Length: 209
Ligand code: GTP
Ligand code: MG
Image 1: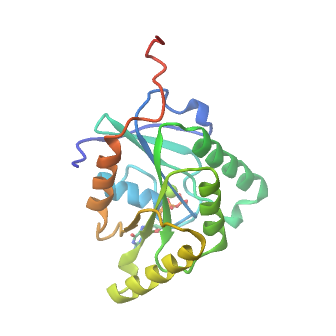
Image 2: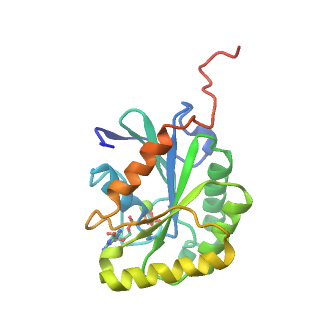
């Protein structure tokens, strides 16, 4: 799939204020600093589209980007950033959970994992929560440019082996780097396939029969 246009549409803290149209959307989630916003910029080919930062906790809102005037990419705040303080962490958790549970047109959630890290409790628990709530998701390993090719293979295989202890079947897995753009085509092809499925919501502008 080609990306012909990618435009920021709206940011907000409330799922009820997200765009009222009924289009496929794909949200990106993961721990703060895992590379969500960078991946969105890499996928769309627009460097400054989603705001990135070396300081964790940059993205605090639900950000909608309209792609090819047809579907949405959604940049979500990162979870598990301890320095935020309890109150802000709880607020962000609520924004994320409400969005994931209520947004019917969210066709797939891409859960980003830093390929250098061993499985962390917070990510495993988040996946469990997704499973319990029947949320369709995929795993996206990020920052593979930071590891040698051999180390990347070993580290991600180790990660998946831990997941296999918990899950009967693994979700789709993608291997990416926003720096060298690997994984871009695979992710866009996957989205293209999912875009062919019916959207999980009903357009409010369509009159009821
Ligand atoms: P929050 O919005 O704070 O939750 O972070 P985020 O997950 O959106 O991360 P962001 O894209 O802002 O990236 C965090 C840092 O990691 C930045 O300094 C990026 O330049 C760097 N980074 C992101 N992706 C990659 C990658 O694939 N390779 C390398 N080498 N660095 C990356
Ligand atoms: Mg971000």
